[in-house]
Structure formats: structure tokens, C-alpha cells
Image 1: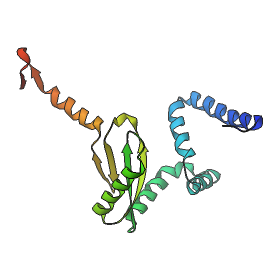
Image 2 (image 1 turned 120 degrees about the vertical axis):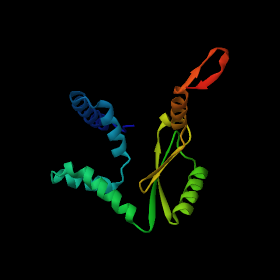
Image 3 (image 1 turned 90 degrees about the horizontal axis):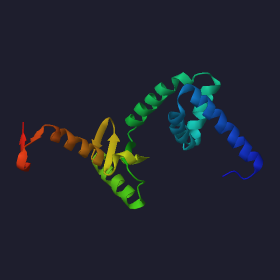
Image 4 (image 1 turned 135 degrees about the horizontal axis):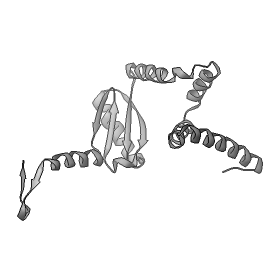
Length: 161
């Protein structure tokens, strides 16, 4: 929270300016997501983005991200594993997932943690172009697809049709 009236006015000015611009472009909630990501970005990421803005090269950001991803995947020392869960990982589960992934890849692992309440439960792991999805959301989707091909008859009996 702001520590002074001056800081409060500065924060409100930035937020209001962003809100009005986002409304005009119809990006209010996507800009909120982007702002959340930027607010958690490391100083080195912010420094690169700042340099790209200063050089009017921000349009290259998606390609820089893809090149960076490729370079990190080629790095022989570490494997980045994106872990998506419905709630934040605790230290014990984080250690278990890290150990399991290190055994699987035979390398040191760096977890990139994401929280997505829409998966309801379970876990989604992504690394080196592979995805393992054992989320409740995916299991429900599969059950819905399976049940879509089932016709119900009187008496509660079901038949695949």
C-alpha cells in the first residue's frame, strides 16, 4: 500500500492512465493479466524490455521470448519445467516434483510455477515441448466426451450407441 499521499497520487495516476487506455482498446482484463506478469518479472527481464522500448523494438518481444525459450531448452545444465496447479505449491510438493523431474530428465530442474484455479485440481507439467496433463479439468472434459456417446434408456441402463 502507498506510504504517502504523494505516492498514492502517483500510483493512481499510473493506474488510471492504464485503465483508460485499456478501456479504449477493449483490453482491460488482458492488460491486468499482463501487468500482473510484469509486476513479478525479474530485474533482468525488465531491463531487456526497457532497452527494447528505448530502441523502438518492442515488436520483437515475441521472437525474443521464443529464441530465449529455445536457448534455455538447449542448455545442457538445466531443464525448465512449467508446473501448473490450482493452488500454490507448498515446499514439500515442490521438492517432490523437482526430484521426480530431475530423475526423469537426468538434469537439474528449474520449476516455473503457475497457478490456474480453472484446472480445479491435479497438475499440468510442460517441458521441452512435452505436456503431461492430469488435471481435474482435463479428466472432466474426457468424461464429458465419453458420456456424449452414451444413450440412456429407461431403467437406467446405458448403451454405447
